[in-house]
Amino acid sequence: MSVTAIKTPDQFTEAINKPSITVVDFWAEWCGPCKMVAPKYAELAEKYPTATFIKVEIDELENLPEVETIRSMPTFRVYEAGVQKGEVIGTNIAKLEGLLEGFVGGAATTA
Image (cartoon, rainbow, N blue to C red):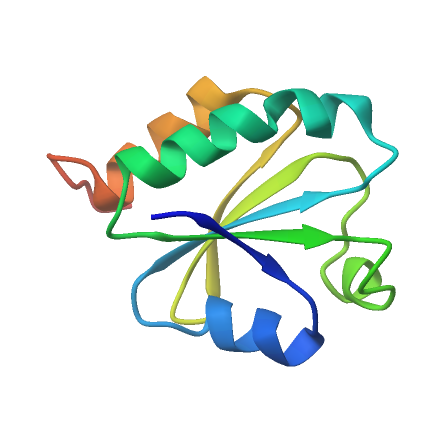
């Protein structure tokens, strides 16, 4: 699996409304920590092929950050069937992976 760059609000809506897990990386070109963590995010996409991994460049979809209330970058969110199931703000990929383990890992847990 690879990470898909989202270019339109419709693509975003379609992606997060899938019945399976969708992980979103809200990032910006000018954000150094976003660039630093990008390869690790791509590794997660390979490790968890049953989930969909997308990236949203907040400056390309100008209204989306306000609608999604993105205040810090990077922000990672996990959605299932259009419902936000979790969020990690910052570069803590280990925390994001822990969150993913609960949804798509070997031993799924219920919240």
